[in-house]
Image 1 (cartoon, rainbow, N blue to C red):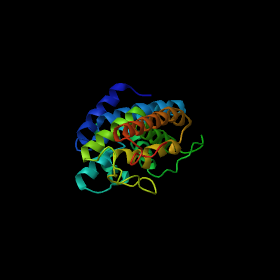
Image 2 (image 1 turned 30 degrees about the vertical axis):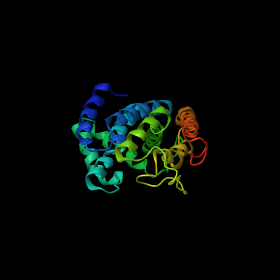
Image 3 (image 1 turned 90 degrees about the vertical axis):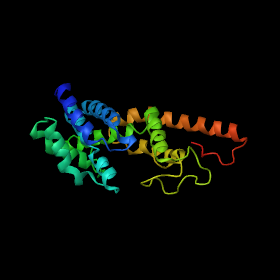
Image 4 (image 1 turned 60 degrees about the horizontal axis):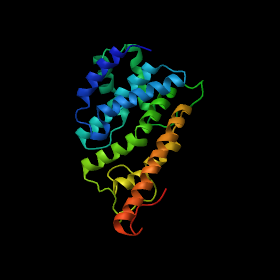
Length: 230
């Protein structure tokens, strides 16, 4: 595993690239995902440095989405991410493995098998780290920060929870987003270490929703219009 100094240099480069990204995909998010990715990779017998590098460039498409106003796939900004790796001083032989891992996270086809391609196994760690940052206390904080930024209410009884699960874009409320997406993340974790961390974070989501529902009923006098239970 390479040194922290190299990661700091890459982080400084990425900080500028991601200046236009939304509040849920800021530099703090990248820092947390990099740390989690490295920890998961080491526990899976992989190179934690490569996983952390991949984490720092995994959201370049988010900055492009902010600029273009449309959904952008990671493969569309491969050249941008590659340039960030170059400017960050990352060894050239790591560029393609890192970028392959980033793009594989969007395919959900990576394997846990030891014989699977290394990029796919790194992708599984990166995927899980990204999911874990949307769970637990951190996930709760991110959900409300993003909801506040785009003007979503805490809970809207009239909008309720959409059927069919998560859909891209704004939801009816922040609490609806918990039910439509965040509670489902535990089932999407790909690594053994990720699933272990995910159990604790999922429990925190459920506890928060139970308390929110209780306080909604306290405020409104009955359960009419309260968010669903968990």
